[in-house]
Image 1 (cartoon, rainbow over the protein chains, first blue to last red):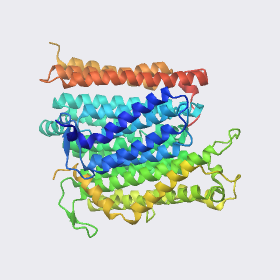
Image 2: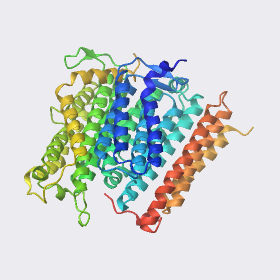
Image 3: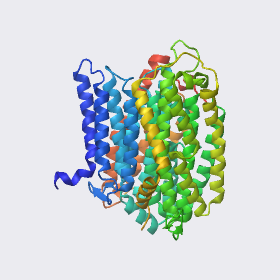
Image 4: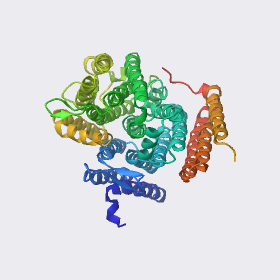
Length: 498
Length: 100
């Protein structure tokens, strides 16, 4: 086998080597300054270019059929790489010199782990990738070693490990049932001999992934972790590591456990309805902006989980004429909508968390109040005009107002729910979107209508570059959605029988 | 040969004990032990299933998961030590400033 055969995996290889290199250089150099940040950013850009060169590749298997490079994996890899790149750009001004090498190396390892998960078609590689990303993010969550950081990291660690354990136990049952660790073999075996063991495995797998995706009632860790972790790490957790849970769940549940369609259809209908309603309701009562964002990302996970319900309801249904795009299958449209929402949400959430990072880094250390308290956002439009404007757009995008990335995702996803006969779920989701405006508008009114709460904020270059790039991406997807919808449809087709 | 059911019974019992401990214990180190119980119960399952299959994938999986569990314990104890330095306790009931 020649070297060029592995070309679709060069992105992962590059990032792994770079991560090791960053640690090595960091321990050799006395003061690395901003070098680590620039190195990581350059590596991520190169990896993004490598992944983008194989964007809609035909499914190709590697390493004894355990890794598959296909349109779906490339979609998620782009999401993960873009999120990490934005986080790295924003982190450059904060993490310099001593300790920066560890920070950026962990970030790169976490990205590699997520990329491996998005490509895995075997439960061993899936688990290893999952743990690589999880272990790196546990350490990142505690990185600044403040009291809140450590509390957040401990909670994240305990819930994350329990999730991994549930997942592993479910996987062990799947292996026992199928005698193989490949997802396609498990799918065939569960179709052939459907039994109670498969059902128990499904339960364990849903609980394990549910923790990672932060679906209610497995969401308890998310608000605490997103509030307590360093703000830029929260961006990575909410936008990256959570999406990893979705791609793993898509692969395992939609491909390997398709025989239990009716069971997970019911389970996800309940989970999705609960998650979006409770997430939005809880967000209305919060005063900490990062906690509001955490609950809003729980609610968004509820919307994304609608895709499972749509697939369960419309699996293998006849194509219908949709949105003057010709005949399209509702299940494919549902997954495509979820993918668009995942892409949009990853961008919006990264941007919003970077905004909170900028604001909280300017609150004086002596101040008694919580640095993320909403009162610190009063009059932000005058104190930090660029940040406030970007946050304004991200809040509108999260609420799903056109023309933004958030709107496109929600529109495609909710219409797929209607086409597959799940009108109650679509109505509930739209009502929830309306409810979510309450807390988004609250943040906006603090930023734009209140008197300024302090002096002008110096907007550091790294943060501003990351914010503006995110803003452009969010609006770009909203204004020119056709290419992205087509891309998501191609990625969605990977999960469904042709 | 010991029947497969007994292994699964052992694994499920271990998993339940670990889960019970997670809900009732407050000490950070005890929680780590409970997590180890959960992970190792899955390993027993994997090895037992593998013995009754024509392939050894399960044993390979168990090896991977043992290595990962060790790494996980490493990260967990690092966080716990940092926590102890700052708070002076590993009783997680006292480390709960953020809620609701």
